[in-house]
Length: 339
Ligand SMILES: [Zn+2]
Image (cartoon, rainbow, N blue to C red):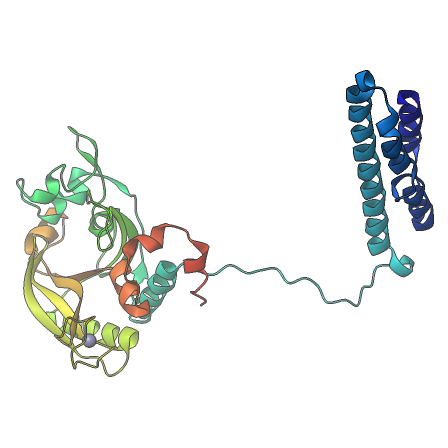
């Protein structure tokens, strides 16, 4: 019986054909109900007990090999059929479209904001993410004891000399004030870093856009007009703004800008917490100390600066509730934003 199995096994292993009918013949010969393998299984009960184990194993192996052979030959057959049906490829068939990706929501909003400032004559400027103390703090009028200079708030790459991951894109503006001639009219987008616990409302990485305008006779009225233009362009022509006094080391006077809630049109809803207003950005007139520290004549020139977090504005625009979604690269989230 073992010899018999061996003969059929080598016959199966050497068989080859690319004709459908030959393959079917082969299947009937060996694998049908009356085929060679079935009859071997039938004779199995006559095998002496001491040989049953060896014969059983050989029989099972034979069946596996035969099934694999049939599958392999059939697969080859379909492949060749597909490739050369009627002897040629049909060139009139429409192509398979390539799936296009979508832009990240933060990129969409950043580009929209930059576009608004570019129309006002601002040029885009970018700078390093790793900064020294001077560009990130000192040149911006941060006092020695300011909490941002603490390890609790800022990522330090080294101490003495202090090297940090920049905590705002204002550091880029310092580099611009060092190198550029007046008038300066710049908008600086960038990724910034703060030592914060990650939650739905805070992250250690986020994105900012800041604008800086320095020239002779730049006034608070210029700032307010720029803010009004930006708010109406971005949030809609009905949008109103209001300014609340605030404090930043690098501007004096400083203000926070709110816009009327575009969801409830100022009536009050849960997004604006019933106030009808949404806090959007910080701004102010460039502090004379900052002008002086950066070699600009403070008796002749004035300037304004403003800065906003792109994440916050994107969350308001699209109704996104969790900040962490921006950084998780979940395709189900990202593919919802088509430009
Ligand atoms: Zn509202």
